[in-house]
Image: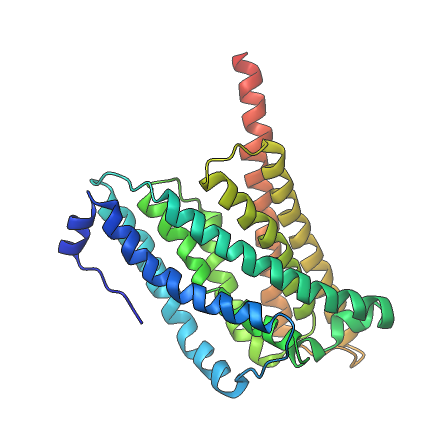
Length: 293
């Protein structure tokens, strides 16, 4: 179901957060259904509709990205002369839902990848395509790819609450959605590592967001740890791409040169942007505070 809010409706919501909360709750109810299914499927295998899902993702990825970009610029323009929304309760629910989802995903994919790594070695953990077709892991691979669309909702809260929207945020969302939705059909090598790392980082990140939104004071060091984890994730992603390319030359890894190039450029750009963010948010800010003191 798609909820469409026109300009008059937007104006009526501007002074009534309860109405907006109700509208957002509609999306939460859909999320609740998804997470209920996930809880049930945590221990049981599931059939994933790959033949239907892959063409749909390819057809809709650019549409989702275009609508997302339009909302960013249109939403910021509309909010220029409007008071910000607090949306604390919806944000807690949103972040907590994604945290729970990511925790389950990290546990299930992490257990699988650790088993392959310990029993068959690094090369098999990188090149093995069974991650996409295993009785349990295939669901979490499918759920991971689909989750890139709901995660765009993070930006809705930033815009409606009139918070600073940095380039890294929306660039990361758009490129991850495009890459994952296009790569999923090819079951390329390295996907198990990419998805497991992302699940793990998001499990910590969304838990942090939920705590902050709920009003808990969280140490700044925890935020620094999350950013450092993201930087490490991007470095490992570059290494995995190098290994895939190297082993692909000997016919031991299934991938495509074009996919490796795009993935490497994506991870490298993330690495640079996250390093820049870390310096600006923590190192540079600390130096300025010391100068003021």
